[in-house]
Image (cartoon, rainbow, N blue to C red; front, side, top):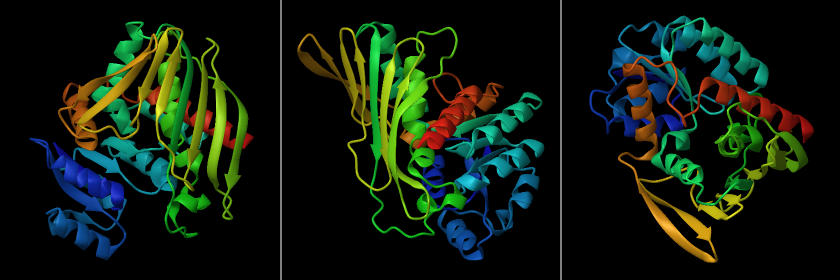
Length: 329
């Protein structure tokens, strides 16, 4: 299965390293408007000159490429996904899927009329760790879920106005860039035992803005119709512990590394005044596992990856909540 990458930043480099761990899978093509980036990336990852494309139109036209990984800045995701669907390419798109709810709905309607695979790259959703958490909740290990608490924050060492995280035109900001992780976690956990997807009301919104107009930190409380409450804190201006705690009527589950789990991870169960760790082993590292998940889904003729990976409606609902949160800040 041959892959192409559009956008050659840090995530593209991680992808290129990870894809080499898989059999019957190859990075065939790359696309960037920067000649220097194309040549440097192509040399490092053995991409032949004829597959180093200077624009996205050319890589979409390449019949030898089956799947496209979109790793550009957030503002380009929508247009590239729409072009990819037209070109009949399967797509793995970096999070967030789009920069607003309206665009994600447009993509959903387009997908319904096509036979194209699409997944938003929220990688923890393809890791065995989250499957194990779901299993423990369904086994009633901590009783009925009451509350969820999630944090995701890091401090950018050298803030530049042109940095994508602090650039409004590029789709920057804490809520859009890292908020999609805890929002997706809240929706997943709050709906584990629901027949129909429930979406939350949002309250207690607070945060801070950088001088460019993007949110550099934000907090919110989500209240779901089933009574579950979720508290979320995100930032790109300070380091956080980066964890998720799920509180039930009979105990708690701590996920100490929810967003970037490793091959050897664990969760902590707190129950009856005692705590113990449960180890989780993954066959692949996080990003290799995500690529393998997409490959296997496509080989089996699926248009979406299996639960708990991000489905189309998961991504659309994520954007709906993110839009509401941003508008309330």
